[in-house]
Length: 550
Ligand code: DQQ
View 1 (tube, rainbow, N blue to C red):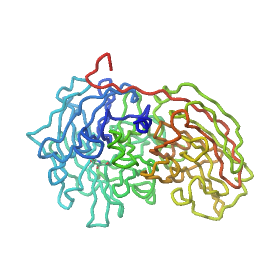
View 2: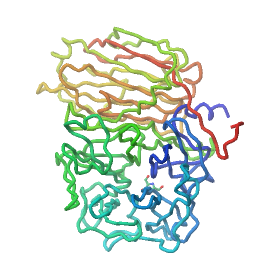
View 3: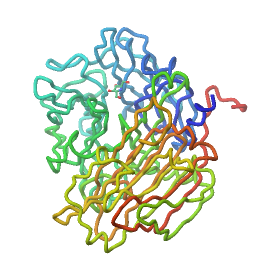
């Protein structure tokens, strides 16, 4: 079916076939990047959840290995859900701690081990039947609200790990919480009193992650291993996936390993009520430290927004978003930067350059780039200075999701790009900025994705998503967009914010896909100062067992 093959991404991680969700246990091991993921090996929808497994030298080209662990024990028969992998420092054992579902759908933790730690590919895994399950929810925690264990710190002094598990407490105020356990062996786990952190009214926290970032000093620009938790000039990022609304939130704060409490720098920007990792279709993100490039890398999955029937017809569902490096933003001091890993630039092929293109109010300009299905776009925009300084828009409280998207015209926006667009602009995905100047003079800049015209198919959830981010004095507005057939990822201002969309164009495909600049502001001319557009190579996917023919 032609309609279904063009949707397959060219350079994003995907399964061989069938369904995928959360990245699990990502790591670097003996020369290989490993990605495990929540996987239904039998069907293109969620269920029979197992750990899929693939390895790569560069996080872009993949060798797909056999499923690592499947639901085949009483303690995980409903699914082998998300968890983590830890290499034991003393004896080199490779330990997987995962959430298992019982037939009653209760959530309990179990352990599997790599059968042969000397195998760099870690192909075979054995469940530790003698000890499993190793952990059940503590009193007061719901039997189905206990999942996604993740080690956050190793104490070299007493050889203990601290790990976090997400939950909620409805006897409080529908409170999202993360608990901290200590362990030496991932078999005997002890709950520490109190919680790492909690936020009322946000519900269940899934896939909790807590990691250090360098906030000043000589480590700036480097990612930090979890052993650097206590280093000087370090802040701690707490991230959780809000199960109620299916979005990943984070906040910056400080973690005290002795009291095992994390506090946000700013209480009004707490986890679940403040900053998003990404405004679009991006969930269950998780980071790992890459010792080769001394960086912290984040994976998050990009689910489908078409119907379950369409996924079954396609025979597959979901991508992983492009892996991102995560750094503290030293310029603003209030957010992290997430940015496509530098290896993505190695996929760039022919490049088209455009400069100083004036986009008048209410107009579009086509960028003739050739094939427009796999692109990396960098664009910088300047707004007519007089307009920016003088235009006042009543404090309209602009909101990407409810203010009418790319077609609704305001004084200083929207303007940006149409990608995966057909010639008559009846099908397109818009990435745009909207600047509002409030009556108090303050400027608020939004990054939005408008999916409303992204497909002429009718069984698709289409939204406008996005939010504000910081623009410092003298900065041009900058945008990076990765386009890959049916996934669009946009990063504003070097990664201060991002938005990801799954889209299903029906006409803007193959040689009919195009790219345009657009400006729907009524009060300002926009100049695209520099726009670079690269066509992107595809990455390889090889399937186990590896033979010269595949
Ligand atoms: N997906 C897993 C859970 C996790 C959720 C099940 C997040 O462990 O909480 O597939 O998407």
